[in-house]
Image (cartoon, rainbow, N blue to C red; front, side, top):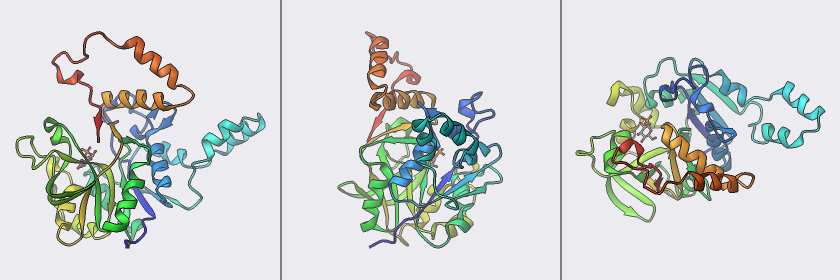
Length: 308
Ligand code: G1P
């Protein structure tokens, strides 16, 4: 039985240049899908999976995230005085308890591997989860929860994976598949952002990981990889053979909210699922549906909803 995972790391140091000007003075992780910031979806997913300690790897200009996960005393008083219990609940219910949230700065944007490495002292010598808020998963059972169940028997390092079109593998860490057993995939190695021609498969990592602390010693020794950054994928490749390593083909629909089209799709999909606006969202979709397919041959217009 694997050791229980109690801590989660949220790398939130990225600059969000793809969403400028919206992200000029606001962290990209605070962009809302309807009325909830992306980072809150990730934190709630972690809470639902039993995570008790929340470690944010932040950077300059990210203080709105700290404020969001702190009590807002003035606002609470204001809402309480007016009897706005629903609104009060909406800002309180998901708040981690005092002392269970920690922030550490990544001094320079040196990559995802470096961001995770910056959390090493706070994580200590125990397994931990990593959640990337850009990857939003709509699922009956939240993605990390599914992974926790699988991890209880696999142990080691476990990453969420899904097939993506071959033309898009150069945006992901990709598995060199050894064998598949149900939703679990054993891999020979993993490669960061391979070219479509060279990719060993189309099975790609999306932003949910359960990792062993041994990954930190590999990260410490890593040189800059793809894109001049310290890559988490490269450190994971080095653990294969030392620790069990599996991909987990999660159940659910994933949206790339780091991309404007993906963000729009997520907004529509989440709106359609909501009791308070599902009907209205479906009506909007009907009104705007076109007689011709959206794709006019230009890849940029092709819907990028990817089902796992
Ligand atoms: C990161 C990882 C990559 C992973 C992806 C998932 O890339 O480096 O291995 O597949 O997240 O979203 P990024 O999106 O930061 O370029």
